Image (tube, rainbow, N blue to C red; front, top):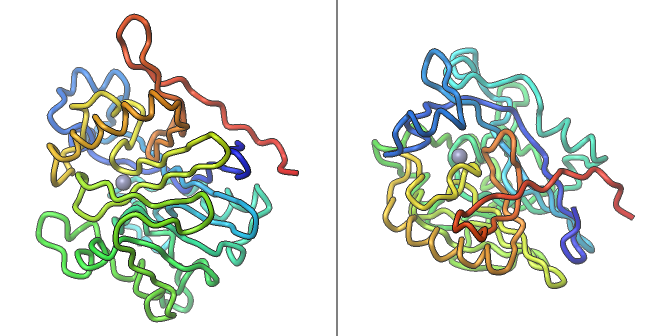
Length: 285
Ligand SMILES: [Zn+2]
């Protein structure tokens, strides 16, 4: 997919499963299970749709999925599939891990940061050895001292190897980390989460991360039970979705197994719908 002068590709890491109730918060199961059927443990299937952004002189990766450092217990708990893998998804586009120069993480929860490192002789090392990892300073500080509510979502092995290599950059607020690729603080899911806004030509793509994890989360009250600040998230969604509809943004849904990206449209019947954008695999030339 082209956005102005930039090329965007969805690169998926493994699918996994989380509790359906936790994924839809106060929304009754009779409503969400029409869209996401639950398994015998009440879990629903989720994707990890990462985004590769290529432009003049840079190759940036937004998010990196669950990674491969899991033991059997973790794999079973989250029903982590063995494929796809981020490495294979990048290889299908002819991109090597060494070519990534920017790794932009919305926040440091394990399903977003897990793939940042890999095990080498039992030790976690950067999976993208030439990349600088960008995250909000506020999120980094929190990840290093989490509280009981979200401690299980953080594993220092996912980011500290970048800090040790001098490749971890904490950001404060909105920053253009590469030409046309800008991080935008988007609190609500937690305090330090950032979204990614891509502008080139007259087009905009927006990576909502956990503010809009699936296309089913477009209605304002459809939010996750995991969200720490739901009312703040609601107001941020209201503001950003109005802009997304008005300017026809290409919206990425990180955890949606069927709709990785789409355009959100207010229809004449008053309903807000997501128009699916097919994933095009055309060559970049
Ligand atoms: Zn997530």
